[in-house]
Structures are given as C-alpha cells and as structure tokens.
Length: 216
Image 1 (cartoon, helix red, strand yellow):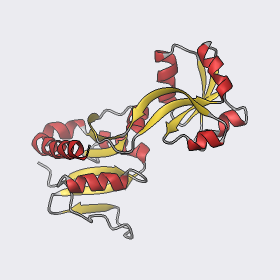
Image 2 (tube, helix red, strand yellow):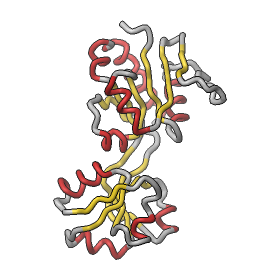
Image 3 (cartoon, helix red, strand yellow):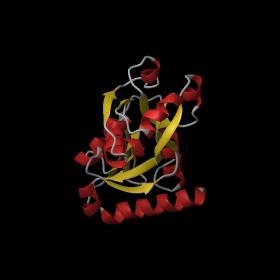
C-alpha cells in the first residue's frame, strides 16, 4: 500500500474547479496549493494525497506510466491521447463541445461527402469522426495555434475544435456545422493503481461522485 495517492491536475481553467470539488468532497485539505510557490508537488498529510499541476496533454501520460495514480483532465485530451487509463467519472465541469466549424458555405462540402481539408489541434478525434462516423475522406492539417485562421486564409475548408460560447467563431465569420461530442472534465485512474489501491481509490471516486451529484 502506497503512503500517498498522487493526483495530476490540469493547469489552466480546470484547476480551480478541480480543487474546489476535491475540497468539498473531503479529498483534499483546503488551501493546499500556494499559487505563489515554486514547489512542483504539494502534499496533503491529512488525507495522504499528493498533487501536481501539468499541461493537459501530459496528464494521461503521467497516469498511464504510474507517475500519478489519478488525473483530472478534459475529455478532449482523453479522446485525443488514447492512453491506457481508466476513465471513471464525469466531473461535469469545464463543459464545452467538440465541433466541426467553418464558413456557412462549407456545409455543402460536408453534405456532399466531398474531400475536405480539416485544420485542428485534435487530429485523432478528427480522423475518428470523419473516417469512422461519417466515412468521409479528409486531409487533416495539424495546427497548434488559432485554428480559426485555417478557413480564413484558405489553409483548410473547416476546422475541428472546442466550442464554448461560439463568440470567437462568430467574430471571424465561422459557425458550428456539426457537433462531434460533448466534453467536460474527467477523472482518470492508472490501471495498476486501481488494482493495488482499490479500496482507497474507490472510496475517493465515491466521495467525488456524491459531491458531483449534490452540485447538480
């Protein structure tokens, strides 16, 4: 039995909600993170938990490798990274959608099942959607920055990206053409840790689930 369970948390917009949920569920001491500190790992002696912040794309890697027993990360990252981890709980915050977006005229290309160029930060998700769900041939272009530029500079016909409010799309003359799937924060678990620390991890999952349902 490990002395501590280690949790990888996603940097950015998800971390505040993740910490709030962990605290309310009695899984973490309030104020465990000092945002002014340069420490990389924060230890909660009361609950025998350790936490660290990571880029979203790295959270499933840490969990798969066993460097973290659990992780909190967006469903988009789980789908894109395809790591060998257990996805055990929808935490129901950070809600948004993965969508196909473009100029209104691009809908004709989709409806006609034409070969389209797709700019995206999520090539695996785009490939799965177009090849397996739509059975449509596409040319996928991987971008790391503002994918909205793709159709605007004629690099691509459409984009596959996360949509929250749709404001950025509207301001750039784009719109949602199709929804791929809803997204939210997920709790993931290392496969070996689930076997070796079953009681502790299931207890933590249960407390988080109760709190998620209470917050709804």
